[in-house]
Image (cartoon, rainbow, N blue to C red; front, side, top):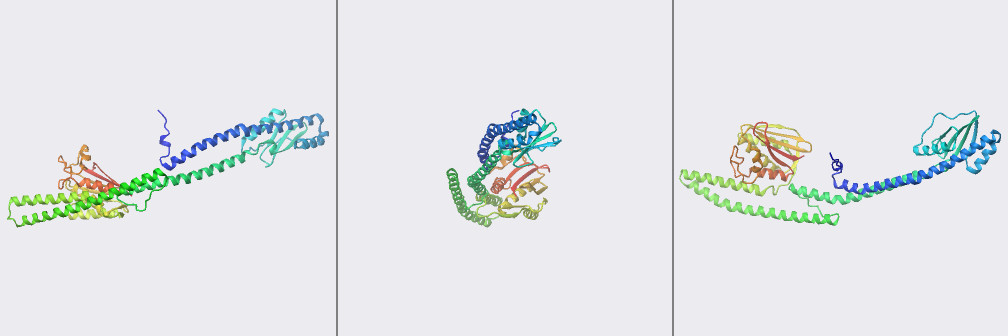
Length: 437
């Protein structure tokens, strides 16, 4: 099984850009830090520790040679030549406890140097005094205590290097975050404007910004949005004219049929005329979409209750299972028309129709279930095509011209939602509507 880092990598452009900048810098600084401590700092510290350890060993050997009687002269000589402060503690023993320095490498280096130079038991403390190191060596009759200047034992510039390294890294990270955020912001605004336009909303204040390539993409989006808006306006005006031109002769035909004597031919002509008017209205509704209506905060729970009241007036007993407080940004008339279309479609082919609404994470789901004959799985996508009429088992648009589901799906997608057909627990068809909360 191959291991892949892809699932663990960030998905956002901001996070990826930051990773591209920060990761190489972090690797480079890690390499520099390792080289500094491994090749320079530790080597320098080892040399200093070895030097002090040699001086301590020399003083110990001179003490053993000359004895306690010459200790004062030896101490003065050591302080004058090596800056080591030496104290003889007669009858004393080495401490049994030891405190470890934060950088344990310091203790390891000094312990190794003293162990290589001394044949006696020793003890040291690098933490008690900030500027000094306490070294004690067990000798006959007592303990020799050495106080060495810390700068002579260790290279003390290591922490300064780390501080400057962390400061430089922090400044670089802040600059990278500010720069990348300013570069990503126009892309995010472009994506938000495109999503809003896809839902039928318009972002009038959107302007091209950012890098040259992002500005070109933004300008192309604005050109495309302008062309689509002009196309929609022209289509709406054209259909309004077609509606006016067709309604006039249809009205004359209806009046002419009303003046004709009753006959089977007249009744058939009236039915044909009614079908023509229904087809015209349905086609206009499909082509017109949601033009002219602005999105606003909508109480979906109240909307579903209104649908139930409207269905009851038409003789449909609609079962409700609703959560309280379901709201979404939507065009009330368009969304109500789409849901009413689904409810009426279910009621036309079933005895029991259930409407339920619930929150599912960041989405709101509206389910319309029925106990009718349903639609076979391989024909459900076909049912969404305009002017599609399913004649087998269930005619999804028996009363129209095959635009009901197409209008509903087009409306829901314009709201950032989706419509899917599934098997219903009631045995028929389920229409699952998903909308952003």
